[in-house]
Image (cartoon, helix red, strand yellow):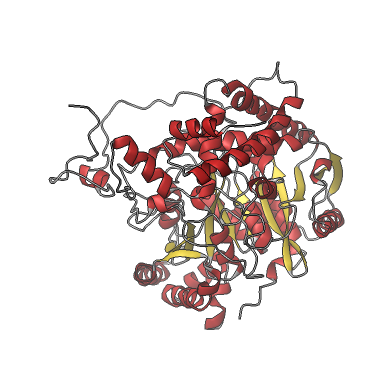
Length: 502
Length: 98
């Protein structure tokens, strides 16, 4: 039995096993995580809101259910019974304040749960807190939150990445067991890379966005943020699937992603024999830190030593992903964020004038600088006279980017690259130059535009700062990507390293 | 790529976003830089390329035309900054002239 101080380090899978076996209780586990948050979150600020009382009540209830289940021997349908979860604050949680990191949603109380929350609660998980995002998930550093920055547990002077930086920091600091993030252009993978955690963006259409505060609807996905690959597989199996409330979810069977890993795990020698791994040459570019390139090359050699066939491939339109994304995503955002008008929810500006004056002032006061910038950019790109030149043009280039991946996956099973061109940067380093900040996403935008699954896993360190390996697969072929990730993880120990927190 | 103060001010008006003069000034430069960057898309000939609005096939999703439970009026209004005294509707400043 693990000692009490080690409880927050547990993965979801291991915690659930210990809970089922009765070796630990949910109240013990939840209390231990809450104590960990108490001890460290004043420095890290991973959480906007910790649901202490509710979590402990739910943990006590889970303990009763676990006792009943042990008596009857029936644990079916509750793989996460009693396991705490940390949820990015852009995901609606019924009667628990949900702000999307924005002042314009200060004190907003959702009246329903997001589908992913319902699914996780049905699986037995309990909410322990809401994690800090960049405002409306717009950013790559979590500096754009309206409620303060989150710090990287590996170096408190540096960013944890973004926009799911709170979830990533919570995982890295063991201030939680598992988390959810959202990924519109890299917001799950880039922070995972910067914090030595696992972040998985599912295929577009794999996971419901019902109840997830919208940023760019043709790109937004919810994904697991975890301490290892098996947890990512487990959580994905639970949250995936068709939802009548989200017409973009695809009605395709959900594999048991965890079983897919266990099968791969039984082959010990050359676990990747016959797996074709593509290395896109366009992902080794100027501006990439040398340490990142060295780390990724070493990871590729490691995959080869596990039996994988390595193929160089080309994704010729890679360099156009960034300008394409920064037209399309703001355009969609400008439409989605039109709903924040100070009428239905959020604070309303107290100014003289008519209904339009009040609305303009409410939005001017409620949105932060990056959100305003993207609303402006998107409004411009969609305005009369510019629509064809920017928005339509970008949609056409999106087709080319998607075709690049279609062709590459005719030759290989998975693609690998860095998830971020640099390790974690310093707080404030890029905040005055939006274009420099956008370049932090340079390796994670194309997959989102193409709708394919991708994930980042721990792959090394440079001067004590984590570096992540990104894996990508064809849409709805998450298993292939997960198997390669698992084989890599099981034969390396990067994921076992923990930041030293004082 | 260059933008004028007046253009940016017009866009802010379309977006119903109150910006200070300083914000408009800064935004004028930043938007111009981003749009200039975006102009590299013009290096590509896309005349014969169809646009992608969504990566999944677009199809109408139909359901039976039956009434299902929805949010109560109380739930819908619970986050509103202002409602009428009986909590029956959202309240805003006058929209119509009298």
